[in-house]
Image 1 (cartoon, rainbow, N blue to C red):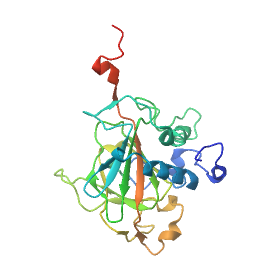
Image 2: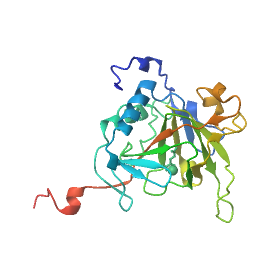
Image 3: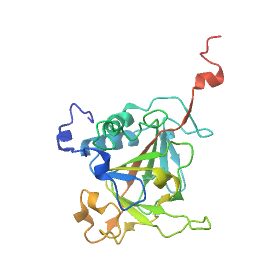
Image 4: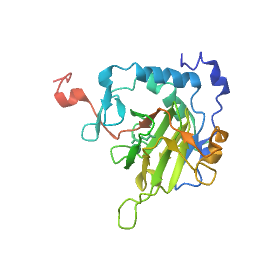
Length: 257
Ligand SMILES: O=C(O)CCC(=O)C(=O)O
Ligand SMILES: [Fe+2]
């Protein structure tokens, strides 16, 4: 059970004292990387929940499939509904428990967001050879993305736009995301840059010089030969959708006349 009271491996989970200790300093503001954000038991439990979700939960794209919790956005709006417990616990409370800095008045990463916590989770599954095109996440969300990686490692590429506004196809930076890690991207990294994952079966030329978060990795020795052979990697992206509508209000149901 991935439950904080029964999971003994939680004793080995040492979270940073504050986010400023795990900032990826070589990147534009701002990104944070925590290599051990969840335990192996929690990872396994969440992967089982994803796997056992009813078939219609999956949206099948050409090469990739995804789940959207609690539901898809409609015109950038979320229909008000709580997240299922296996997505909110322990991850959301753990996100809320980490302060930005050690200052006593310091707040957590969602303190300024409309609902003070994420209300939406996208689950993306990437088999080897499959990635996601460079993109921005757009205006529907408060500009904070918390990505928990499950199952395997891969590189997230960060891209610049050229002066003429077109995409520079060469990634400007690469972030290596290990299983059970948390990556937080916010500020200009959210608003001004694009991100994507290459459609490759192996991440190559991995080193201290080429990977922005090398010093924050749990196991840099695993990539000593500069290679990461892709296996299926699943990501949970937690965000706060800014506009939330009450379904009852819209349909005139449940309303007192
Ligand atoms: O899987 C990831 O790490 C990135 C996913 C992503 O960019 C998105 O869902 O918008
Ligand atoms: Fe994205």
